[in-house]
Length: 302
Ligand SMILES: Nc1ncnc2c1ncn2[C@@H]1O[C@H](COP(=O)(O)OP(=O)(O)OP(=O)(O)O)[C@@H](O)[C@H]1O
Image 1: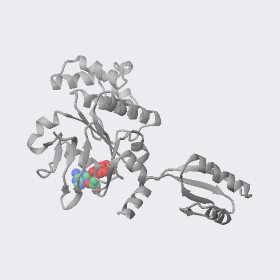
Image 2: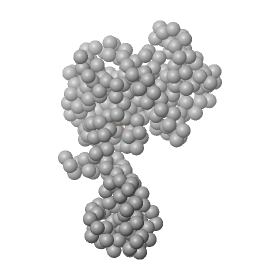
Image 3: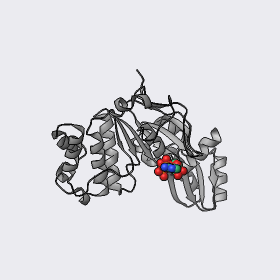
Image 4: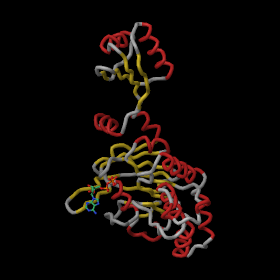
C-alpha cells in the first residue's frame, strides 16, 4: 500500500501550447498537512484540478491513495473532498439547509449536517441565511460541505484568501483539528509562506509549474533561516565592530545591518556590545525570509 495520499510522477500539463505544469513530482504523505506554496499563476489551482480529475492528466502520472486517477476515477474521488475557488453555497438557504441539500444529493443521512456544523464551529449560525455569513464562515461552510462524504483527503485551494485575521485563524485551527483529531490528510495551497508555516507538516514549493522544494516543515526552516535586522546609527562603524567581534554580516544599508539570527541570547549580546561602544540601537528584530527571498536562495543553491 502507498504511504502517499497523493503522488504525481513527472506530471506535465499544457493549456494549448502553454506548458503550465512541468515534470511535477509531488509526494503528500498520508496524515500530513501539505502546504502547496507558490506565487500567483504558479500552477497550484491547475494542479489541484488535475488531482480532482477536473482536468485530465496524462496516464500514469497522478496517483491518489496509490491508484491511478484516470482509471479509478469514481473510487478515488469518493475519498477526496475539495474546496476550490468559491465554495458552492446557496445564499438564500441557511448553513444547515445547504448541508442537508448536500446530504440528500449524496444519499447520506441528514443528521450528518448537524455533525458537520459542529465540526466547523457553525452550530450557532446553523439557521442563519448563508448570504449573511462572514467570508470566514462561508469558507468554513465550504469545508463542511466538502467533508459531508467523510473523505480521507481534503484539497483546499487558498482557503484563507480574502479573510480577515480572525477568519484566517478560524480556518487554520480547523485544518489542524481535522488533521489531528479526525485523521484527514490535507493539501492546502497558498501564496504566503507565513500562512503555510503555521499549519503545515510538509511543504511543496512551486514556481512556473516546477517544484523548487519539497520536504518537511523542519527541512524548510533550515532553508528559510531567520535573520536579525539591526537598525543602528553609524552603520559602517557598527558593522566593522560586529565583524571584529566575529559576527557574519549578511547585508547592510545606510540604516540597517542584517546578520543571520542565531539565538535570542546572542541578539541580546549584540545589543549590549553596540550600546557599550556608544552606538544607538533603535531597533533589533528577528525576521524570516519571505517567499520571494526563499525562491532566490533555493534557485541559488540549485
Ligand atoms: N483554463 C485556462 N486556460 C488557459 N490558461 C489557463 C487556464 N487556467 C489557468 N491558466 C493559466 O495557467 C497558469 C497557472 O494558473 P493557476 O490558476 O493554476 O495558478 P495558481 O498558482 O493557482 O495561481 P493563483 O493563485 O493566481 O490562482 C496561469 O498562467 C494561468 O493564466
